[in-house]
Image 1 (cartoon, rainbow, N blue to C red):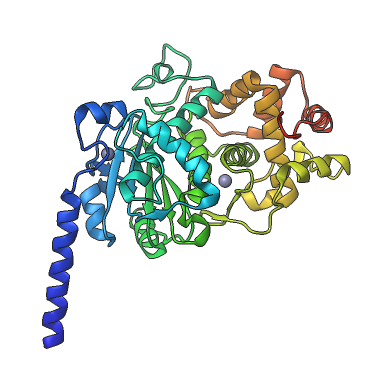
Image 2: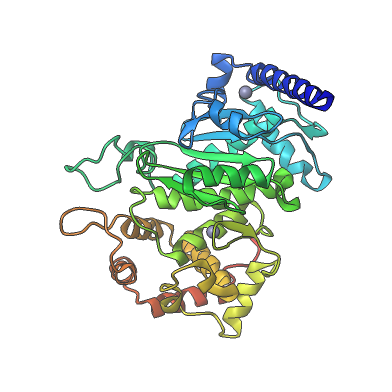
Length: 393
Ligand SMILES: [Zn+2]
Ligand SMILES: [Zn+2]
């Protein structure tokens, strides 16, 4: 009995602390409208996350504190605690803090650790920067996406967020257990690794990340992994997620963008979500250069038919990263049109259709470049041989 009383008292005490903490204001933007606007913050309140409110999410998933932040195109829910600033990562973090400080003067310049509010503000800032990067590679801007589908204009999806009706969401869990409970609550499956989900009725995409493993615990490893997942979410969303994009294209782009932040970082896709891989080559540029030099690179005509990530294999994963780099760096304009064509196929009735995507890709290669898949292989290999992956001077 005593034990019961003690437990419930302890429980009440912890609830009290959690509630008081949730009322604490952000020390950086202080929820001041002018500072929030400068930092691109629309709200620090729970709002909606997944299929519930932020408060409901916090009540169901125990964490010392849930923080929320909404920007122009993304919503974040974070249960992360403090993170020590790693000496190897100090330069990058200080550059990010300097960018954030142009909006929020109270952001420190050389902290030893990042507190939960600062980590969330940094993620949110990088999230919007990444959204801009993605729009730039698609050669699109917000104004290209009407709030509803317009039949009098070229097809751009069903809403203002790259073609979805609602914003992108990222949920960062402190424990795998919370991530499993959360993913099960809306998908029916308790997922172990990072997970992406499209809510069909709500027309939005969500990324859920269990920030428990050593390689994700500090922001150095976390951000490239989040960016990889957001790349998938953004490409799926482009012109509305009505069918799965080709695996080689989707994975090639996610890896290319992830490695722009950290060339060593590699997220691999498991059956249920994504996990970080330790078997892949550490240096994709060297691995791709070797694949081409030894003429062992898989052919695009084969890669194009991969139905899931595992079908790509390690050489295929290196090849799709390298081909994507080639298209981004040497053919950016046409690559954007290629993505637009692959993501926006309509059937005879004007409905989005994922029918025969290999054939669609062949037609687009022919139309945009005059290439067959084999001719793309040749052009790509020539680019690699001419030093496409050599370090930029
Ligand atoms: Zn704030
Ligand atoms: Zn991926």
